[in-house]
Length: 208
Image (cartoon, rainbow, N blue to C red; front, side):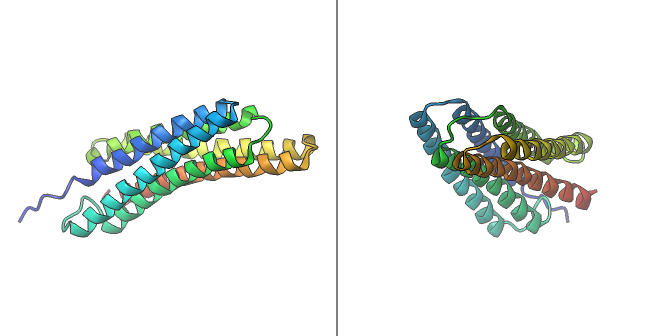
């Protein structure tokens, strides 16, 4: 007997990534703004988006528990939702650290990494919008996953160069620690985006 697989998870994944795109936009604005009070307001907004994201993730888990026939492996549905949520958690952490440490300046390299985090969010949203058409869009999805990997490698290079230059040129020990912790949070965030991409590639392999 033919059984229709539930498609309700796809819109929820899209909702997760749309929320993340909003958070990434605000994070970029926060890092560009030099006003400490404005930065705090951006952080509050990202915190609200992080809470909203938790609700969407909880909805996915709730629907998973009620669904008999899923579009792909149940564990993969759970892992993908969890990793998307973790990506948002790390964006929130970047915003929090930026406000908490209040560095005297924002280096251009940090802005570039935040821009790449935003690109991660855009690319991942593009991917989840095509998940329902995975068979037809297989090549496109794989290509977009490769872009996430390229971004991660680019950020690794930026991170290593930035840390090296920071220890050479930054004479203020407190500012050094501030920037080291902030750039580490940013680099970790792109790793979490790659985790999402890796989950999607795993799903593709299983369904091939």
